[in-house]
Length: 81
Image 1 (cartoon, rainbow, N blue to C red):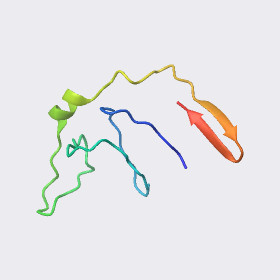
Image 2 (cartoon, rainbow, N blue to C red):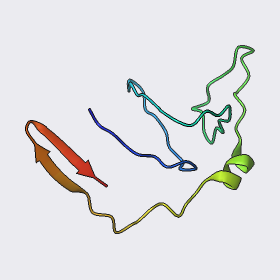
Image 3 (cartoon, one colour):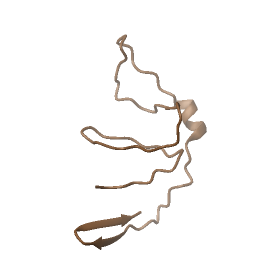
């Protein structure tokens, strides 16, 4: 199993055929930046939230010089990014 820490405000996406457990602080807020042209129950394109997203996305968490460090424990590999 893989674990990724995604700090609040970090833009992220989930691909198809991926099973995840997303543990987060209770919130009823989701902003869609892109939605693969999916449609709602009325066959309308689902709403995107571009302006709201720009207000809350944190860009300061990215370190372009980050080098992954892998440690092998028994039959597992733990990689820190």
